[in-house]
Length: 182
Image (cartoon, rainbow, N blue to C red):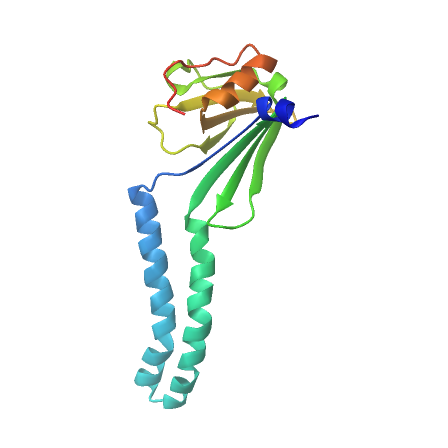
C-alpha cells in the first residue's frame, strides 16, 4: 500500500470530553481528599502529642504530590477513533497515558451510523458507550453493531467528514450529515 492510498483510506480524530459539573465536583473532592491525606499526619501528631510523626511529613509530601498528579489523569477523558479502511477503533486516553482500546469492529458489520438526533430507538439490551464531547454536540453520531459475543452495542461519537466518508464507502448504512463541522 502506497502513501496516497493510505491517506485516502485512513482517518483519525481525537477530542476531549467536555467538563461537566459532575466532573468538577469529582476533581474538587479528589484534590481536597489528597490534601487532607497529606495533612493527616500533622493532625495526628498534634492531637496525640506524638511529634516524632512530624519527621515523616516531608516524606508524605514528597510521595503524596507525585501520586496525586499521577492519579489525577484518571479524571481527564480524551477519546480518539481511527478508521483504517474497514477497521474502526475507539480508544480512551486518560491524561497523557497510553491509549486504551474501548472497542474495535469492522465497518461492514455496523448496522447503521446516523446523526444522534435522527436515532429512532436504542437496540434492546445494548451496551452503550458515550465517547463524545457532550450529549448535545451538533456532530454527535450513533453507531450500532454487534460485539464478538453477538450482543448489541450502541456507540455515541463525534463524527468527522473524512471518517464518515470512508465508512460510507464500505457500508452504505452510514449516513453523512451535510452540516458536519469537522
